[in-house]
Image (cartoon, rainbow, N blue to C red):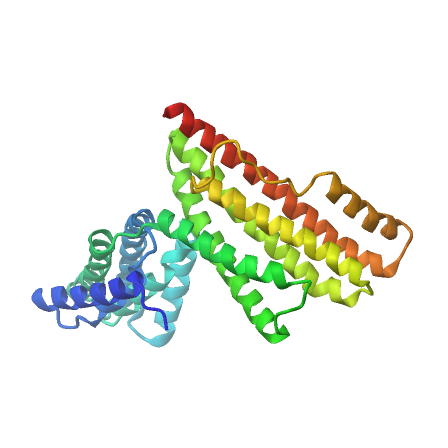
Length: 342
């Protein structure tokens, strides 16, 4: 069971919404609590954007619901028709993420069969919940997605490192390996969602600062490196053990995976400014690795079925190493820029 800031803030937002609705003497404060749940967002920017979007769509939905109640009454078929119209309008306005709460507004307003005083009261109840969520999200443990992103990068890398170092040696139980691999996939997907949030915020800035643009490049490469590492694990899981291979082949592949993960770890230490200037790790795509890949490719050209599977794994290893080299260059550029500023 996970108990985080967002869970706490959702509870506080519901509490505040219910208290405010009671203080304002609304007859049914429950709607305010429901609205607060829908309105809680993972970042301040998205909370502000959702706040503005929700006001627009909820206002439009309330007006349509009021007219629908006056013309069609509050029969179930009438409510369904109005909901369809509101969904279409929300999608036309590119506000599909606000549809849920907007439909709650529609149903609440149509309950009054076109009575505008009742409709206004229900609308204000829902707005109380939205405002409560917005206030709580800003002033109580405001989201720090960038710090969370870096911390999560480190945790995901630790999981990747464990799996990478035991993937070929087969030291870990198969059931445990699969569970850890599935958990790693979910963590990387969560990181991708966070990066999409940063990218969304960046696009809203007319002239982002150079430091912000550089930060986005770092975040993207950190994420891509983990994704390429996971692809190596997936290739090993799908193809490596299905191919006939010798103990020497196991040693060669295991050694290269060890080099890759060690290189990845070294690069992350550079970003943390824990490595002395001028110290560099052996690049994983050097002459030795070229020979390794060449032997696999040669077997692929000869039509060796076993080598076909090994070639898939080798290709994933090469892509991972290539992405690490890109990440390494980014780390060096960041370090040089920091030294110039000093």
